[in-house]
Length: 158
Image 1 (cartoon, rainbow, N blue to C red):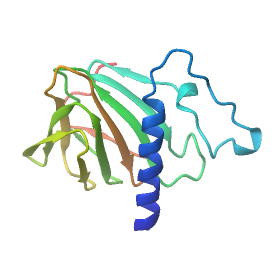
Image 2 (image 1 turned 135 degrees about the vertical axis):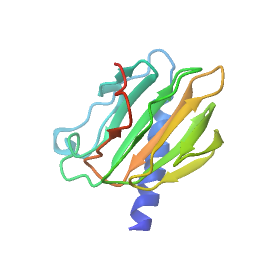
Image 3 (image 1 turned 30 degrees about the vertical axis):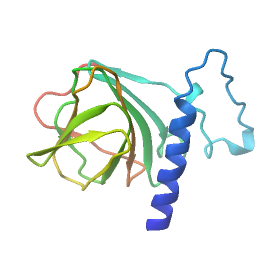
Image 4 (image 1 turned 90 degrees about the vertical axis):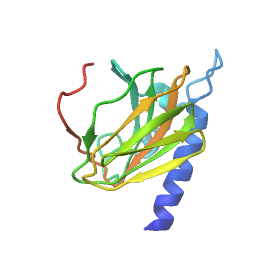
C-alpha cells in the first residue's frame, strides 16, 4: 500500500507540474475513449472557486469510478486561509508546490514552504493560511476516493 501511495503521490506531482504550465496556447490532450475514467486532463476539469482560493480535483471516485484516492490542486490567495476542518474518513497528504503558509494541525502550527510535505491523519482539525504575497499552490492527496470534509464553525463561502 505504501508503494501505491508513493507512486500516486509521484504521479500527482508530475500532474501538478503539467497543470502549472501557464503558457498561452498550451493544448488540451484528447483522451481516447477506452481511457475514460482512468485518465484526466486538468485543462478539461472544473475548478471550484472559494473566497480563499481554488480547488481542482484531478482524481476521485466520481471522476474515476473505483478510485481509492482523491488527488487535487489547491491554491490559496495571498493573505487568505481555508476554514478549519477535518476529514472523518481519510488522511490527507499536502505538498507545497510554491509559496508558503502556516498550517494548523490539531491546535499546533508549522510554517510550510515550497518543497515541504505534511501528513494529516483522519479526524485531525486543520487549515492552511497563505502568509506570502504570492498564491500558495499545493498538491493534496487523500486516502479515500470519497473524501469527506467536516467544517468546524462556518462553511466556506464560494
